[in-house]
Image 1: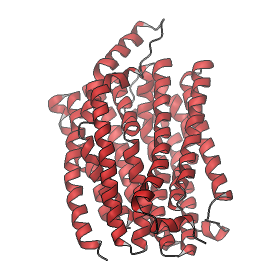
Image 2 (image 1 turned 180 degrees about the vertical axis):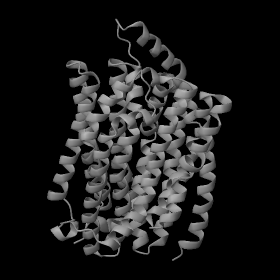
Image 3 (image 1 turned 90 degrees about the vertical axis):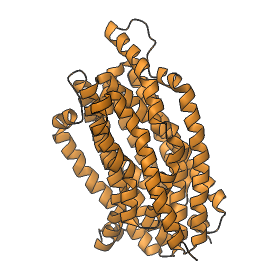
Image 4 (image 1 turned 60 degrees about the horizontal axis):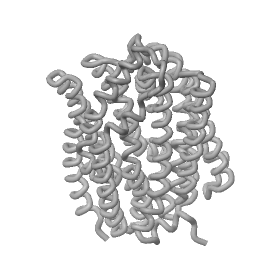
Amino acid sequence: MKKNSDLLGIESISKLLVKQAVPASIGILVMSLNMIVDTIFVGRWIGPLAISAITVVIPVTFFIAAIGLAVGIGGSSVLSRALGSGDNDKALRVFGNQITLTFLTSGVLAVLGLIFQDFLIEFFGADESFKDLALTYYRIVLYGIVMLAMCMMGNNVIRAEGKPKFAMYAMLLPAIGNIFMDYILIYVFDFGMEGAAWATFTSYAICFTFIFWFFVAKSELRLVTECFKLKKKIVNEISALSFVTLARQGTIAVLTILLNNVLIIYGDAIDVATYGIISRMLMFALFPVIGVNQGFLPIAGYNYGANKFERVRESINTSIKYSGILALGIFIVIMVFAPNFVSIFISGREGQDAETLANNAELLKRTPNALRWVFAATPVIVIQLIGASYFQAIGKAIPALLLSLTKQGFFLIPLVLILPSFFGVWGVWISFPIADVLSTVVTGYFLHRAVKKELKE
């Protein structure tokens, strides 16, 4: 009897990509909507400075959660190729080691994050105007961050098994739970930042419960105790590929810290809130492109492991075509409707104090043009995303790492350090499209060369 994973090497690439990408896209959409609604509730019911507070907390929670994402994506590349070659015993051991690595690493980082919370919040860019709000949110969210890391890892394993619908459910259920709890705790009970934080904690618990149920009741991967014991060879193989994602996510965390501090130096807390809105819009608006990229990974990895190189080539071309069309549509919508998107985050309630009203007006004035600049090169980014993911899917850790770091690490961080000294806050926003174009040129060159040399029957 054929397993779900076998279909990755049989069905048409277009059909597989739709089957993998649509659930991934829906899951990412709901997860990003969760972040958007969370920010809307905080901005409208607490104030713009609360958005600034959440923005400076994101780097540490993002990085710890990235441990699970990195082990999930890197380990699932190994797992996909093991399933493709018929080595089920290795697949089980890889998954068991993924669980152990994620739990231990994220647990240690969570404890350290709580011990050094005051230092970290200031280091991440909080000033006195919103530091207390940031600490309130940070402490509660960090209590549940290990659950989030485990969820990020497990979600990628579910996709590697060829069951993307369950991966979608794993993102859908906690997002709905978070939105519901936000409404209850912030609006109904008026718990402010504590309410926002406990709503987020609850969403982590819901996701963890669902993924635990999946691997007990629905998964093809039936683990025994021996699988959880770390094996040096498997850990090294997972780590080599996980480091790609971890370096990319870690670079994003460093970039966020840098942006928060640069925006405080050349601007103020409202500029930090502007970036908080933009960062959520990036994930929300690009959800279908990211979904295609997520769907591409197991297809390319499985077929590469099965030596079906023509199918790997087809998966690259089809993924770029589909995601390119989607990216162009996203670009047009953002350019036209930027002010409409920003206005959603701003309260229209009567009875607000003068400072909050002034902050709302400034946020609405500054953010739309900043949003347009950040999205200015959206149509070309698909080549960079698919190109970097290809090398990760086939187990080429070093090229995957370097290409994953091209935008944020090699181009965007230096530009953010240099341009604001000449152009102020505007220099931050124009750094994004410049980095997008440069990283796409570099990645496109290496992807083209690799396909010509490596993907031969």
